[in-house]
Image (cartoon, rainbow over all chains, first blue to last red; front, side):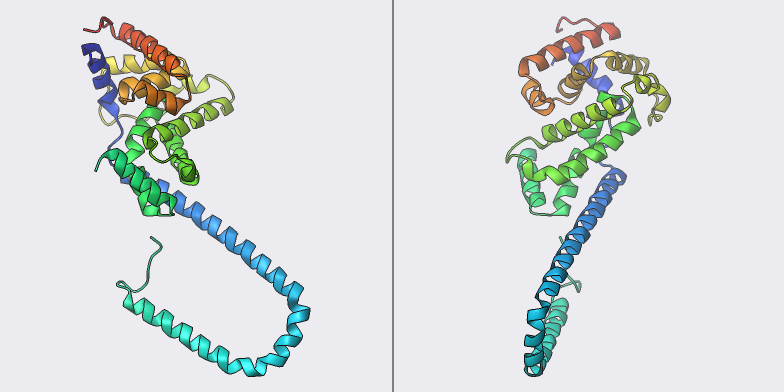
Length: 103
Length: 179
């Protein structure tokens, strides 16, 4: 590097932004999180709408089937619900800090 | 681990959806990106806004970044394109340039006369030339890396840097003899 280049570089360096700027980084990540949340909500809304549409379309076929099988399904569903609840509670207790975060 | 190796690891993790990895990338690259945009557009507040928009665009497009590519060059390229778009959409006027000093936040410490002269000279350079100078003379980018970041031919970058350097040294009253 020549003396002239070094002089230019020194002048450029006079008002560099800080190497660490938590306020800037936090602002960026807050906006990233907001956009991610909006995208997640949008995706869930689409999935829910699609699921609702499928259920509505299939309901004429499902309705009689459910009516005939519902009496036999009640104990099975109750057991499954209890098992899922137990797994969720125990899993939450086994992970340090209670619940897992997303990262 | 080398900085590039760490960047590659963080990019891979961010691609997999890790916001913590992306936060590390923001932390590592915010200073050089903001410095580049400050030198390129002159207005500090606008430069910081552009830097934030750049990181948001990078988060959305991180899947498109080629493996092993320079993250800082990629970010500066996005930032430069955003700066050009903002300049075009700002009424295509020179008003922003004219109000540059008026809008500029006070620096943490007073700038020297030489530094002010440098900024004035920088503001007079054409945008491409200013960006090349900001990357190669102030931020230690190689000519090839600057060409990649700005999407310009290598020869154009070299000539922009040479002309820009000569102009800045003229304004500062220094010699350009390579001494």
